[in-house]
Image (tube, rainbow, N blue to C red):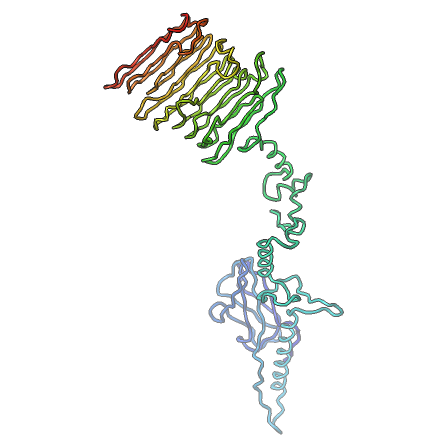
Length: 504
């Protein structure tokens, strides 16, 4: 017998079908073979002789074969290696018989043990001749202890711990984006700085798994819409007399966001629909619209102020105020004012010379006896000489005002205008549902629901207490007025005339 091959290891691919694995190196006993199976997920298992496989060919120069009991799943690997115990059990006596085959068996075994040593050596980490490094053949090195000294090899765990410690202390070159490694979705490692690439979306926002634009593009868009966020700076520059357009502001914020007091001197459309339950500051108004100091002229560049949506809970109850000559075709729609105000404050206030303003679909509700008032549109916020020059074409519709505390409430509407239109409003618990102040002409109150749970309440008051002999109340039409007095409430008035100081 001879050992005519230098191999002592055979490797096979598994496929879930094959069970016979022939190999071509000599082995002396079945127990000299170690059979290892690496499954498709990379887990390694040493198989057991007689349980998982059988062996053919022990002692044959040409080798043998492994027969597995069941086909091994693939893609995997089956490794057959000769691993003999390193001992010599043949005893040769002095002057004994020279048995050639016995000697040959001893030499074969020694040769096989030498081959076994070479097989282990060839799989070891080695340093190539003439080189100052060790070559791992592009394989992982596992079970490495974490480094202690500066020149020790680093492990994944030690690198992660180092990076974490650097980030915690905020020191070291790792904070430079050009020095921070980042694994892109495509598996390629690049620096964090690469995300700032402007012209290549594959290196930009795609690096964080977002569409195909660049991070630069995304930030540009965010900057464009940043003026829509709470805390943005209002426009404080008064526009020219010619129309110059308006800004659009959709306010965004988390529940409970605090609205800062804001002054907008240029036209603006503010939408609070998507702002959940804002709380106004303790003093108001929350919004001041229009420039100050105007005394005359049709400033149609100021004609596009709009406040839409939003819930105001608590505070002074002063929500929006229009400076003189800037309530032109203004619109206040769908706001909710809850448990706010005082007898001297107004949630919506048009100061002077307002034409075609619309106040519609709003809710004013107070359960706390603060006696706040809802809407005032009279000329009392600017030039005293213009107090009786009248507003024009005021529309006040579909508003609901409730004072449901234990005491009499505030005023729902107080206005003076040519062509007032009050339509389909509800006033519950108001001290006065609606006041038509001087001068008021060609005015219609059509559809007013009024409840009077306390004494001394008035549904509609025509005229006010301000002395103005030269002004009149004329062409006032009231229709579809419903007044319900709660049992026990006395001395209430449906329509009250205050004409003693005026020409009617």
